[in-house]
Image (cartoon, rainbow, N blue to C red; front, side, top):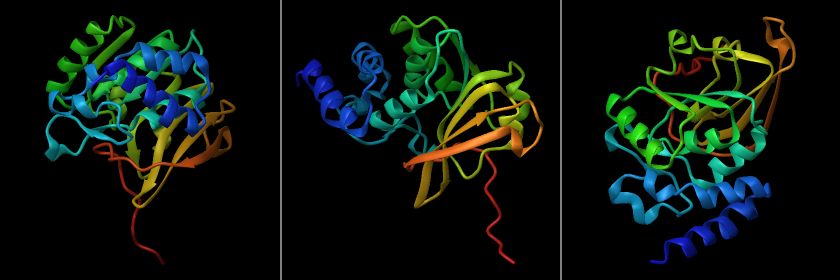
Length: 225
């Protein structure tokens, strides 16, 4: 397999047609070697339009599909001075992409064995402005380094906790895949004021996308009255 040709095909045939036209992001996808962040048994699938399992399959965690990662990155409009929180490090690939757009990234990973692997992957990719921390990203105690300009959830949640939104600076943006299968959407929430209620946030959910859920985030009640 010609790796560079396959990478080019991924960018031109999957990612561009999905509305990712920011040339800096397209160049970044060519620079950061996605195959180096995949589990060894899945390297041959690194450029396929699908989520890839990472680590213990029983845990159900995945790398997001390439076009989803790219579109999230584009729609967040991250600036070079901004501070980013990522929840769900996995292999570290999304953290590497975020790092090239931001000043610094704090990435939280619940699985201790994945933390060290992500650190190794990031060092190999020569990414030095990411701190990978072993923590339960759903626990408010893990968000003590805030507030943040950008928060990215690298996996889905049924709903975004209000306490997590409170970690956004005014003008800050959160991106997550929100909902319950089979109906989820990429959701972007912007903090528009310093008020401590829902009036401080605006929400946009522009496109469909399903993903494996992040652990320990609360699900909404299924009861209806």
